[in-house]
Image 1 (tube, rainbow, N blue to C red):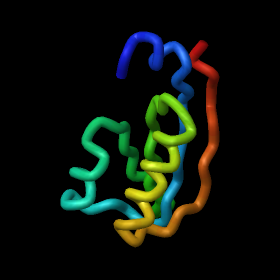
Image 2: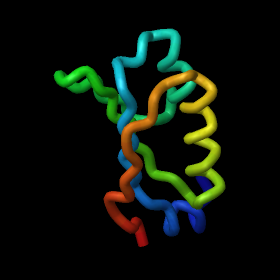
Image 3: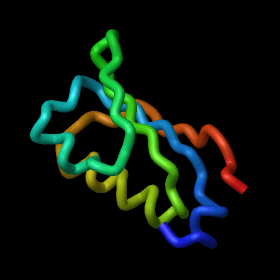
Length: 77
């Protein structure tokens, strides 16, 4: 991520239903993945802009993983 883009990045938390198997982790290699005890997976990432967020959501959709929530946790400015 470029330095100016990093200044505008926001931390997002995305929850999906089920635990992602090792084969699916490759799609999210630069993100923080947490397998929750309640059977959900949390994906955390600093995302530069709305286009990058939508790109990540498309990747999740393409894996056929049910999306539960998307939250912006902080403004990185």
